[in-house]
Length: 277
Length: 294
Image 1: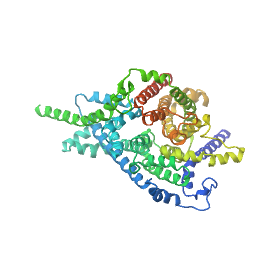
Image 2 (image 1 turned 120 degrees about the vertical axis):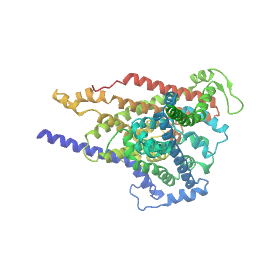
Image 3 (image 1 turned 90 degrees about the vertical axis):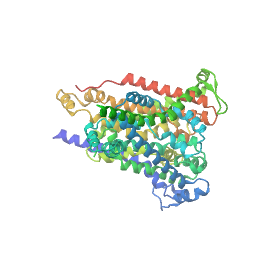
Image 4 (image 1 turned 30 degrees about the vertical axis):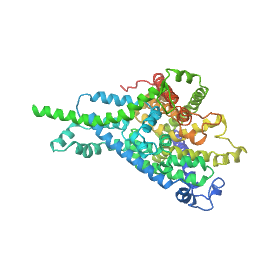
């Protein structure tokens, strides 16, 4: 009896400690969100503000545009770039992965090995020579400069190739007998069966491109074409004393990723082979 | 027979159609830059005219470049802070998650949501949170009467960045370790208990050896992350104070796009890639063990 009681006390303590740590871990987010609604003079002086204001959001969305820092436009730039790339990566990976896992042809294994070889090289090694290429193509300061180098991903193709292998051949044969063409097989049969792979590839691609900072910083200098991350960085560089608007803009930049993560969290956890309720 | 061969031919054609798209794309956006990277690393160029071949001179220059060695030391320094901190915290998090009975999803999500913070956004957030008048220093001032110069002290700045990167990644790494822990069969622990093993012995003899693949994964992730750090120092410290937070990525960036030496920047990129790859191989050799449950 005594032993059992002791264990339950240590369990209670563990839960309390974890609770406190969880709150510490979310605290920066809470502070950010709360501060973005505080009046400027209270951001650093009061924990609980006397009143809430949306002035900082107004400033960043309306005023900043007149200071040649068009945040609304940057937000749409980011959305446009991220969705285009995510869509393209998921679809192209689904099709190429199908060819590399479910079609028999000479040279297939060589291509798969080449993709694995490609993944050995970290992306940062290509930044300077990729800039040379984009410059030679005359694409500096265009959306294409950000979008084109990310349209197809070796990692995405690899993920789909691996997950398609678990789908029984009979399904595909049956679909073929029913007269289904390749397009139908991939979009209507393979993709739904590997929904978690599609979600993981989509989620990581979206987060990666939304959060990508160094590359657009290099290739885009026109304020009107900057994605949110770069415009926010340049604003921070020049107007670092505008703390309120900066925090409001940080909220705007962070929230889409948090929302998409919360929606797709089930697949994210599956991605690290977890089943949490 | 004929239809079979035709089907086979169609499959080959279709396979090459899809693969062809991939190979063409990879040739333009991977192969072409790859060749340029090698050319640049062995030549002198300033974006104009054609590159002039100079052999290994970029590499010998790098060996004598004092900034390169400063960056190298910074990176080692960062790893000495970051890796023990993040691995210990992630491991404790994973072990606690195994024991927790209620609110498991809440704990997981509150740690994991830090992982999806955006680089620029959380740099701005932390530079204000830890600023001279920020809430963290206010709290410390209340208790000690002093403030801590988190990002302006040369030695502390790197540690502060390691701290915020740890905040971001503990949840993610912890969950990878947690998945590894969950894969360990409960029966092993029960058998050990029958043999009279205490918690300490169980941890060292069962948990640690069997979680090895997950631990190796996390270590490799942490090493790769260290060599790729750019946004945090760029946003918060600009590489200072006294170049103590200058990273390889920042040095490569300023060399290529501010000092207009893309050739030397390519050399730096190759060196950085080789170093991170070498370290990953070394870590794998030292700690990776084959795990089999038979």
